[in-house]
Amino acid sequence: MAAGGGHDIEIKHVLVVGGGTAGWLTACHLAKSLRAADADGVRVTLVESADIPTIGVGEGTVPAIRKSLQHLGIDEADFVRECDVTFKQSIKFVDWLHTPNGTSHYYHHVFDYPLQNQFDLTPYWLMGDAENGSYADSVSVQGQLCDRGLGPKLMTDRQYEGQASYAYHLDAAKLAAFLTRHATEKLGVEHRLANVTDVKLSGDGGIEAVVTDAFGDMKADLFVDCTGFSSLLLGQTLGVDFIDKRDTLFVDHAIAAQVPYGSDDAPIPCHTISAAREAGWIWDIGLSARRGTGYVYAEKYTDHDRAEQVLRDYLRESIGDKADDVACRRIPMRIGYRENFWEKNCVAIGMSQGFVEPLEATGLLVFDATAKMLADQFPPTMASMPALAKRFNERVRHAWDKVIDFIKLHYCLSGRDDSDFWRDNRREDTLPDSLRENLELWRAQVPSVYDFPNKFEVFGVENYLYVLYGMGFPTNMAPLKSRYAEGANARADFAYIREMTERVAGGLLPHRQLLDRIKQHGIQKV
Ligand SMILES: Cc1cc2nc3c(=O)[nH]c(=O)nc-3n(C[C@H](O)[C@H](O)[C@H](O)COP(=O)(O)OP(=O)(O)OC[C@H]3O[C@@H](n4cnc5c(N)ncnc54)[C@H](O)[C@@H]3O)c2cc1C
Image (cartoon, rainbow, N blue to C red; front, side):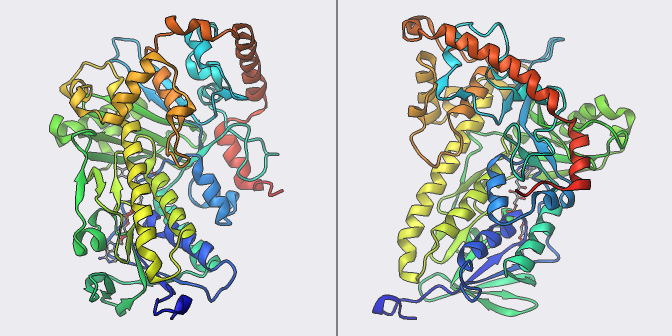
């Protein structure tokens, strides 16, 4: 009570509602930050239903997750062992550029930086100084590591470090269970199993308590809504509107299937495969014990039976007639985000906050980043909440808008002409203004850090470079040639990267072998 001499109320108890990956990541970040110096610090409780299942998908991540897991004190080898983890070094986009006419096209969006010591090779690659290599292969070793099926780490590399940057593929259900153990056993999070059946409001319109079947009223000072698409607290109870973004990103359904490997020693790709199809795209993720696959599509441009057929046809290419027996699950997806993410004493994190198709694994990326932001910027008192909420809402909205720009980029650069889905995706009126402006600029000059002024940008210049030039974006270099006089240095760098590719690849293990060794021997801590 009475912080700073007034009648302000200290925030002493947070209740996270929902135990999917968003709920548990949030609980971990909050407990780690708020109880660091004092085990009697802010109490963090998580309540989840044993009857309402988690979404159960969400297998791809981006490299930022490494920092978070390390920050939370998670042992990387335990994580690899317990969450069916594999390493991810890239997203391999197959047939996104044009419909195959016998020759399939692919490019890698890898995680290594293309800028060599601030000397940007991109303009020189555009001017043909790189001997015909793809953009990714010319500026980084990592596309080749993926194509050769190699893992990103040496056994002598320390936890969370590698020869190339990496993220993970993981089993979402196992991750939630793993984080449950970590949060409750190591970070002091209290765990309750109960169904929330009602929500009680306080006099100021905030939340006073959630009513549960097992524990009656559960009160707290701050509530975090991690109830997934239902958005039970923020959306349903506080009535915060949902902003639908399907006019920009059309994809709104998924059909998911778990697929066994053909044999125990089948190679495991070290990248996500994203294969374009007539009304969307298929994800194909190799975990250590199985593959996770799915077709994400726009209902407006196809029907559910046809979508399932498209997925089975894709699977048939690798597992033959067994594709007909694979169990498929249809998942409707709400595309867009809430008008506010923090309203009164309720913050939404996870799919209750917003969601777009998982093309660049932005789900966990945004939820992890916003959970960390909430933990770092946690309001000490009720009076400090509105200012923090305003800032949080601005930042998170910016993040979602930037995610939408980046996802849409993949569609509007495509030359596929096999359906209205692809043709409509290129229509000017479906592009956000910010993306349209950037594309106009980048026709005349190479993207640079000046185009990404925000320190908390979700995707930076390097991500754009891989996608733009992987898809053959036409920056007109003719009027710019006089600015780039370092052709000889660039050619030397390109040659060095080719040499480095062979050297790095020569020392790395095939991906499956690396995972087996890690499971057996662990990963060095120091
Ligand atoms: C098809 C698809 C593919 C995806 N792929 C990726 C990917 O590759 N990478 C990525 O980063 N993200 C991906 N995502 C997103 C990812 O799955 C989610 O971001 C992540 O799982 C977090 O979900 P969540 O915790 O918000 O919700 P959920 O997993 O739905 O969890 C909701 C929780 O709330 C609880 N709950 C709900 N109502 C109540 C109630 N009344 N009482 C008590 N508890 C309640 C439930 O029991 C559950 O514990 C994908 C999503 C979809 C739909």
